[in-house]
Image 1 (spheres, rainbow, N blue to C red):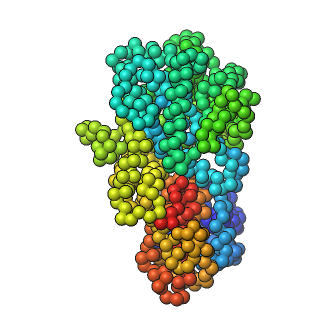
Image 2 (image 1 turned 90 degrees about the horizontal axis):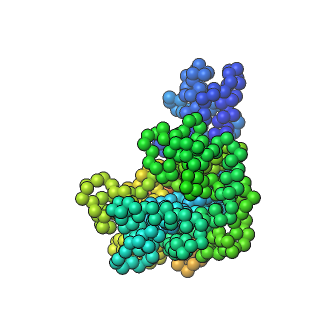
Image 3 (image 1 turned 180 degrees about the horizontal axis):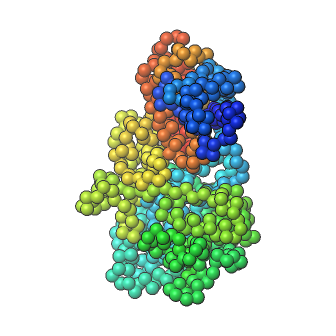
Length: 638
């Protein structure tokens, strides 16, 4: 990877200057390699000379020129750079020798970033099995699936978990609703029926508070697992999970194993975790006060305790001790999550057995067989920002048990929730009379956009805009458009989903990327590089000879973006940020379309055709890699 190699070489040059000055490395000094904003300033740049001015007591330009001389003498990059220039007020700019790069591009096409090894366990989706999935759940799944694709591309072994909370309040509420309320109307799927039932029972709770006692009874029976009520809960959860898996499959999202919360209790994982926790001073039973009889995990300092699911009245509440076992003996979600994570890291002697569930997906099952799931080196949990505190408590439990290395490798990928734009909410039947800027989804109130409904609406929108029907189906394009829309935002951004924006074929959209990829394939087919329509793979054109100084601006800009692929991958892996791949792919497509419009590819000057055909092929290959990471199709035709 060019940028990382350059950074290391610059660090060596800086050390040489510091050694000559008899000065140690400043603790705050960090060498960064950036991409210049102006194309005339080369492909890479560093401001380290300006950062060294105070330490070396020289002007930034003097330091930049000295460092330039050191780097030129060291022949950094083995000839990959055609020039190093010092620019006011103290930058060093590096220009790639494109002829050298083109002849060595294979070296930079393979991923050379993160070299960590060992299995990565990624948990994502983990929807409560009490109703159909909505678009907020889909953002979680798209992020998790993309991270799995990203890490797999680096050579890591990736195992994908979907945690099924079949002992939680939400499923208990749906069961109470099935038993004690009446939901009318036509429902295509069972999950849609349960969606309405869940909303109805929460409304009835307000009218008849005594019915909430029924939830407590149902929770007990679900955990015991032997009564008719438990069977109703089990069948409800399984049916809904099957529908949810089908919904996610439309977006290219799959799983290796479903871990059912009930099996954590039944297989003795919690009992083993409880014994471990009792051996630490951080886990204790409260003897008096409002939490008397509860087992809690000490957060540090004096905590007043926090009831599971209770709102936090102020920031200090997040410093409270965490209830793991309630006074009535019911386990909180966090308690079972701690046991689950001890198992994920292979820290418990107990294990699950598994049965096939659907389409290559395994499921924990009492009648199953042993399988090599779990025992991860790194664990990544994709859960929205509202679960930051419970995730911190799981990490704290690992640390309290002496598993500090595992705690350090437990990573929470936090993200913002999804709400609806006023226009989209109104078009999909949500009451927008309040005039708000966005509308939150709430399962308890029955407000939200179900994934299956959204896909149908998006498919109809795509169909109405298509001028011709070739290649991908409108449904495939719709799924790609939705997936890209949910991935392109920074993880911490709270997405306001707008249907019209998501289906735009211009601008930063998934459809725009697909059209750019298909356009490149069409050009290459006309160039005789292969027959895409027949299913025959495009043949790679010969690598051209390039005079970097003779490159036209659109050619150079496209070539630069192609060269940035591996370092974009590296940044996305290190930051666990799929949106970086989206930004890269959009910029790459934008530059290709600019190149396509400004530089005739097949009808250009004879001495440019070879280069432009190769650039088109290389663009298509690189965008194809990005589309694969993002879980989007790479169409021959649209």
